[in-house]
Image (tube, rainbow, N blue to C red; front, side, top):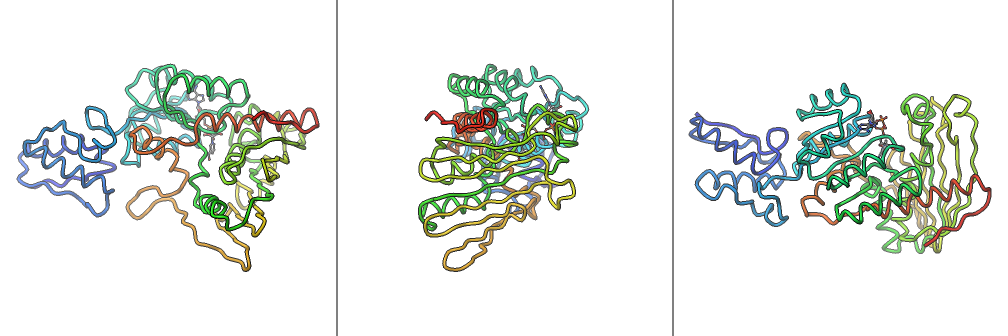
Length: 413
Ligand SMILES: NC(=O)c1ccc[n+]([C@@H]2O[C@H](COP(=O)([O-])OP(=O)(O)OC[C@H]3O[C@@H](n4cnc5c(N)ncnc54)[C@H](O)[C@@H]3O)[C@@H](O)[C@H]2O)c1
């Protein structure tokens, strides 16, 4: 009798699991063990296969494989365990990203709504709970948090106090004092604490950042960024829309991406906005905002709204334009394409996708979660820190003050 094992998702999440599986089938009488299909798995799976075979032939079964010892894995040789809190529209993507990734193990999922937690746990074959105290007490190395915007602080503080590394959805918080509290708690904890600024993994913006860094457009002069949603998002998707607003929900992405691309800090803001459409429908937040933000040596208009027509072809209405002193770049997020204009117009190809032919998720939105897992494993240097999240919230806070006080607001360095 021979046995066929799959050295990766969904059967096997770590070298330790594969060693155990090889040992088990040999004990059950298998005379040969085959691995299906090594060509389909990540390079790391080859380490696992070698380790499982040498381990079952008598080597120290607890010895980490080469790659694992390089990244200082834990004593079991296991990949980091990650729990997810908040399994709504976006949090399900967190759970999916970790379940799909060979570099970590999705250990537990949690939602205040037990039916939601049970459904996601069942779909992904992991333990579930509706009690975040169980997440704080579980063995997970890291916790990924996708609760509503205004509920980030309490949940994240509880996880940091429990000694967990955290990965938190944007915005860091919906007030400056809460953002300061979180950044201070993260620094004090010494844990890895990241905010999901996913566009740093967006191939379009990676391309633009590189072009700016290489001076292909000259020095940044000015730009315009729109990120708006269909009114359906505020009216029907988010039950908590009135506790957030387009500035908290959408500005974090655009403000972070410009700060990252130009490598400069915002120094002052002046904003105009209006309310009325959403408040007339019982949702107490801004309809639309334009904010003119002065960076150290360039300026950008940031535009956001939650009142794009429900009949729009895409739920997201987005546009990006950056002028340098010798060129400009336009990006239409709706089709994820780039248009470079220098002495001629170019449309460079950039990859987008959902799943590759081997079933692995390929879209960039999953990369920040993989980055968190890699940081826990010690194979990546953390970026998108809570300090980045704090600077981001400080700009949004200044925009809100400018809207209310109807004057430019200076940002403290
Ligand atoms: N990065 C992105 O592209 C992106 C996109 C959409 C949303 N988001 C962010 O993700 C977060 C969640 O948004 P969403 O659209 O999934 O909202 P949602 O309302 O669909 O889901 C939130 C979930 O959190 C659960 N929850 C609330 N309080 C909880 C608690 N104390 N413990 C456990 N579970 C709790 C709710 O039951 C709900 O299932 C928000 O911060 C949002 O800004 C990010």
